[in-house]
Amino acid sequence: MSMQRRGWQFWAQLCFTLSVCAFLIVPVVLSALAGVTANFFIGLESGLTLRWIGEVWDLYAETMFLSLWIALACLGVTLLLGVPAAYVLAKQGGRFARLIEETLVLPIAVPGLAIALALILSYGEFRDFRASWGFILVGHVLYTLPFMVRAVLAVLASMDFNTLEEGAATLGAGFVYRLRTVVLPNARPGILAGSLMVVTLSIGEFNLTWMLHTPVTKTLPVGLADSYASMRLEVASAYTLVFFVMIVPLLLAMQWLSRSEKRLPRNHRPTLDTEHE
Amino acid sequence: MSESTAVHIRQCAKTFADGTRALAPVDLEIAGGETVVLLGPSGCGKTTLLRIIAGLETADAGGQVLFNAQDVTALPVEKRNVGMVFQSYALFPNMSVRENIAYGLRVRKHTRSQRAQRVAEMLSMMHINELADRAVSQLSGGQRQRVALARAIAVRPRVLLLDEPLTALDALLRERLRIEIDSLLRSLGITAIYVTHDQAEAMALADRIVVMSQGRIAQQGTPRDVYQNPQNPFVADFIGTVNRLRGTLTEHGVHAQGTLLPLGKGLTVSATKEVDLLFRPEDMRIVPAEEAQFIGTVSSAFYLGDRTRLLLAGIGDAPVMVEVSAREPIARGTEVGVSIDPQGLMMMPGTPS
Image (tube, rainbow over all chains, first blue to last red; front, side):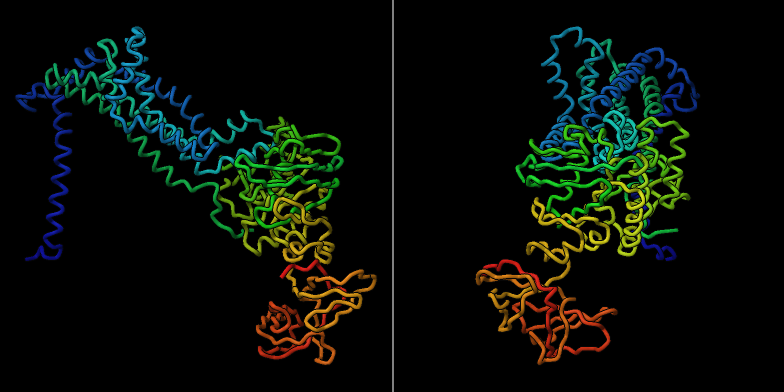
């Protein structure tokens, strides 16, 4: 029994891990392949083609542009609302600020469908608004805003920005100047992380959007559901592939950002307390 | 330097939003070019007073801060032209050392060449030329403090405010920077207000010490004055080490523990009263038993190198601390006689027993 060295548990665990991985990865590969296979029911021997991707482009290009557009608009709004909100919350501190922060997080806990329903009940009668992409934007902002606020808040909390701002003020810097030269540059990692999060979440959002959309305001994930229900399997798979290509770079950027954050030393703490001269 | 700035503080009090009184109405006059140290335990209001002078905190209604004849009470911090050094340094982590020092000059729209020249001046004044292009995160604590000082001084502030600038440093470095700050303040001739809880630091740096306790000024005076003539028990206890004996004051002198101690010259007594006698360890001498005012038993002896500190039991309620020259070793349990230098004898109204 030469395998005794590692013990049978090791091999059992390895097998288990590999099969779980395969269980997760095989559908992704199959789905991606289906998107570029000429005929999925015949199989790969029918040949590879970009035809389905072309068809997806013809049918659904609009949903991709709308998704990107809403994601960017959502980013704009969350930056405008979220960064100042985080600043005020961090500055204020105390129980009231924490209460507000918790309230902001509520939309994450409440199912998207419920939020969508509430929005429709409240604003559904404003027909022009209901029919525009702005309606979906409102839902996305509600859902993503807490992520922006939290990301910025975390950075602000880690750098004692109050004292930094006081330092700048004693040197003669007014509020706007301090914000521009001290607060925002130092909060940048948090703003960046929050931004990537917001864009990624907005592009992938389905729950809310599915309830809020109209036939003319269809985003990519809604289009996906639509194609799964009504299109050939190859078209739906090709569509999925396109979604992947859009979302994966964002996810990678997020990972990379959080890692480079950890590598940076925390700036404001002295690393050595001895003098070198 | 242009003419120095005197600071006048009139009836400045501070009550926080939750109702706590950080500062009772305080009056304080600081002459131009003077170095004043606000000294006290944490929570005594010294930092609050400094922040009111800086403009980082507003005094309660009725309080006034004047720089020379100018009322700056309503002036926001960025318009007061003060320099401030924080305990946590507050250097901007997104800027290099050079950019940190130039920050105030940039705010004041100095030209690039003016800035470069002033920064170079500051770097060599603080002996940190080689650090100019370092990031803040690459500096040690002492280096950070030098940069923070350079940054505060670069703008030629009217008043330099220092909030426990040395507290975060280790003892050796603290001593060295204290000497540097002292000579810096002397050479600049700038009005400086320095907050600390460390009495040794205060004694070394101050032209005048303002001792604070519970939001009030307990005493102010030169370091010598505050050390030698404390006006109340708090100051006596907080500055230096002090021994305390209960006594009764009569026209002949002070009776304490069965001994009559003569009074210093010039003291007259109108009525008998209970007093606390205070005297410092260095004002006592070991004497032969027949000359001794008190006899005590050595309960502990600490050899400090330059002197030996003895704790004597059997004199008062608490052990009495005596400092003697370190030459001859004194064993625990030895009975020694001591006498107090009349010059070093201080009296306070007696504390009720």
